[in-house]
Length: 178
Length: 154
Image (cartoon, rainbow over all chains, first blue to last red):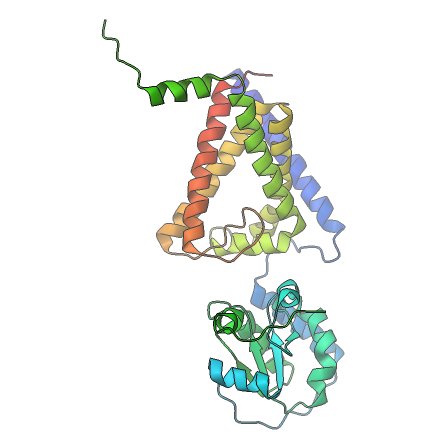
């Protein structure tokens, strides 16, 4: 019994030390984790608000008729004809490993940095169609990025829900980052 | 006196368990697993916090605290098991963690939640992987309890 008590005391000390170490390491990160958790959508909304506060309001883009979602054939025609802008909402590392030809990286998990990198291309023509994809139909990243871009004043947005998995399963051409 | 005959398989298992290298080997294996698991999570606390959130067990006020505190705890427990310093206490801690992980994974399976275990960094959530993680938690629980019972006190 005495030994068990001593073991529990050691565990308590180790747990306290671990929490202190974890909190300390967090303070030295580029972007420390806040103490209260925010889900992916809330974090993205915060990023959009920060971007919007830095930018002046743009005139709404003229609407182009776009379906809510594209089929594989429709998406392939956008890619082959280099029509509009294709955005990859997956984490940047996956984009580097392989992406749809011509697609630019705008990762959901690092939206502010990604947006700054593609902003010039987005602003070239605000009426151009923008197609967003992520991994597959079960991933929510493309939908969240679409919402964020809509909040930033882009209106001609659509999704390719099949995503990277649908594209590669169909044996379509791939491109890797140089 | 009723003396049952020991089968070949049972004898091999008994000799394996009684081998003097079995306990240190088990400690090293468990310690290595927790050292690796803790290190992958220290690197990406946000991804680990997202994994914890998929279990829908903790309020937002606790998710990030656990995501920051648990990985160093796993690393320290892993180091203690590997080095043998307070290994009994470390094995009890690891058993506790495995028990909690098992409960978390089990309730996710019962509720039909598709979760990302986050045990070794983040990955694609899937039910099959959750079953695999559940089985692994049970194995770790059994192994750590064995170490706790067999390890001499420091």
